[in-house]
Length: 96
Image (cartoon, rainbow, N blue to C red):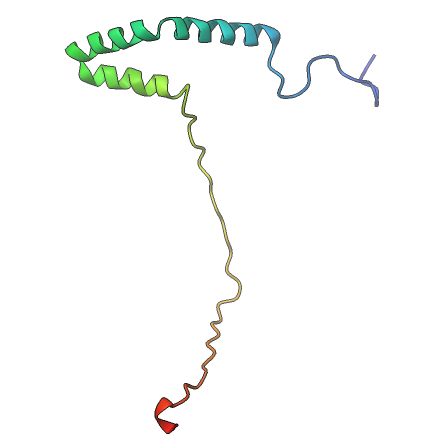
């Protein structure tokens, strides 16, 4: 039997994460929160031998906190190229 109009499809609503995905994200968040002090030590240890690698790790971790900005393209078409200049005479202050 094919799709019938008005038939609701099963599944969750758009934008609602899968239950398993939410559980994994929550578990990962707890793991990170429980190891914040250790992460500082580990990052310092890496930085002593390879500062460039420590910065790479820090940048990768920052992506979880500071979202990447998306690129926006702006396109505009100029159709009217005329310029209007309104001149207003200046009153002579010395005439009074």
